[in-house]
Image 1 (cartoon, one colour):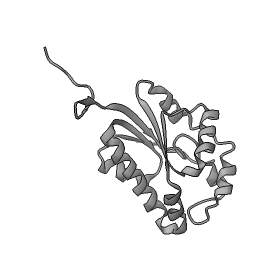
Image 2: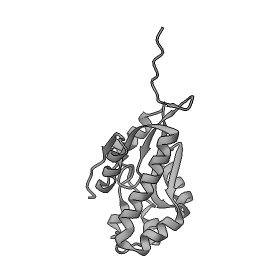
Image 3: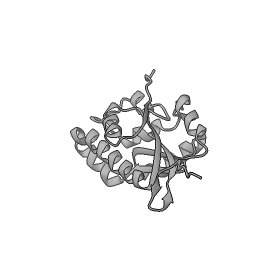
Length: 168
């Protein structure tokens, strides 16, 4: 009789499988781009206003619903002070992850204080979180829209689907 493991072991414990989703540009359209925001002229009040009617990217949101046997994690660079507003938005859209991981307020302040540092800070944040998740979970798939995060996913040996779409 042979024992076949379908998931990697963590010590003597089987790891749970997870799928990791980015949020803005992956599960919901980047409404803040319509409002004229980018890393050079960021305003959280404008961003929060743009969250009032985000459009779901159906192909990716369907994937979140498609993985009922795995935990779904949303990993976003939104700051943690937007946690309640983000959870309300996700609930209204029917996107209910098992876990929502957000950038700390301090990390967010640092990235906005130095616009040239903005993308680098986001990349470091996601890498740090993904490395931690890899210890705890078997990451089955990552969904991401930003090219600058794909190198991290490749470096970590993670499978991913790049979500592409244009803001109309």
